[in-house]
Image (cartoon, rainbow, N blue to C red):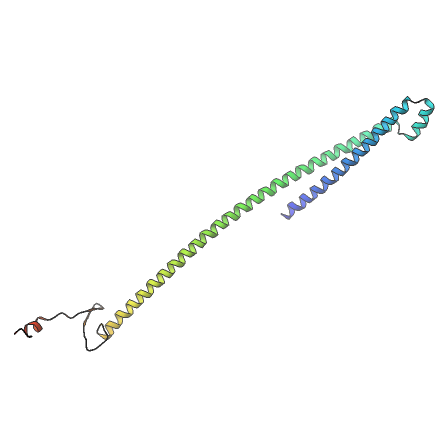
Length: 184
């Protein structure tokens, strides 16, 4: 980006110089036109007046050489100006291309960032859910172990119940109790 800015600055300086030279050439051209007009007027003067006027005005040959030199300079600076405009156009195109490339890259990164945030949120929720399930499972295991260790479901010795496969089961009334009980 700095390189593009330095090229743009350089092109702008060349453009300013070319415009300045073009303005200078235009003013010199108008001065030459005044000289040519003066020479035309001088040619209509009498020969004595012509001698006097020619001492202060360029000769026709010098005037043509000056015009050619100025025309050459004008063409040179037009060429420099065209080159500067081409460089400026290329720099603007290049800068626009780079800006588009960076904008697309930023959009891709923003999209990826949003996707990652969504993934992190989903995984955080999954971890919380799994942690909750693990705690519930641990509580169930602890309760089952206590039942097995205590030998009863209530943890009291007076009210004994049977434990089968880690679960409390109410004792079934035995047929002896029914037969040998109050019904005899």
